[in-house]
Image (cartoon, rainbow, N blue to C red; front, side, top):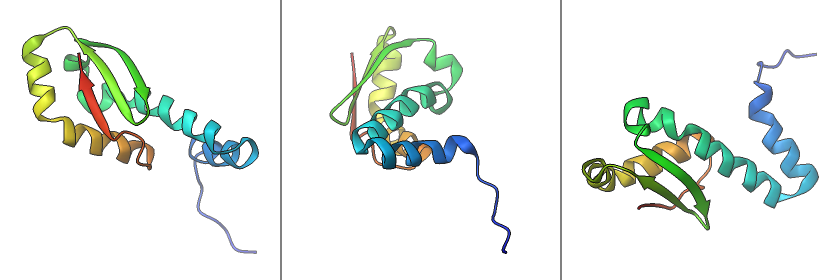
Amino acid sequence: MKKREAVRLSEIIPDVIGTVYGNECHQRILESRIIEQWDEVLGNTAAQYTSDLKLSNGTLFVKVSSSILRQELFMQRSRLVEQLNQKVGAKIVLKIMFR
C-alpha cells in the first residue's frame, strides 16, 4: 500500500461537506473562509479600519472608516480579489465594493 501525502483536515472538510450536503453548503463555507482571510490579505493595520464584510452574489461589500484608505483599497481591488480567491482555492469573489 502506498503512503499518501498528509493533508490538513481543514482543507478536505469543505469538499466532504460539499459532496454530502451539496454545492450550496460548500459555497457558504468558502464564502466564510473569504471573510476570515480578509485581515491576513489586507494586513492587520489596514484591517482595523474595515468592518461589516458581507459577500453576496460574488460581490464582497466592505465598510471602510477612512476615506483615504477607501481610495487606496479601491485602486488595489483587483489584486485583493485575486489574493482572496487564491487563499480559498476557488473563484468566489468577483468584485469588491467599498462603502
